[in-house]
Image (cartoon, rainbow, N blue to C red; front, side):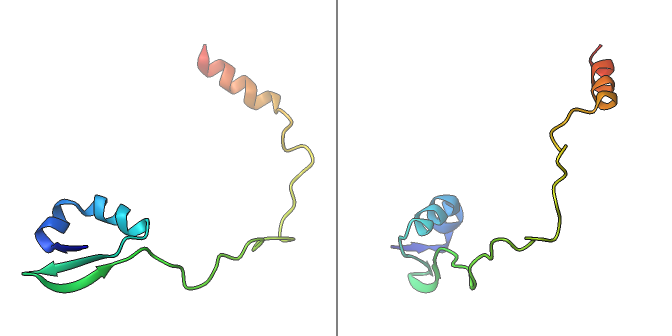
Length: 77
């Protein structure tokens, strides 16, 4: 799909969505192609587990702290 620059300015979000879903968009000026609008492809894949082994979660992380609960209760009243 070839789109002139003025039309691309007016419909950028629609064109970005189309490019994201795989359609090739060419932005032109005076019907001369300038750039291709394509979906971003990361240069390297995301590395999962980057912080593995660098911290630990306390066993009581979900336990309620009575003093904090009392502060919230007082703020509601």
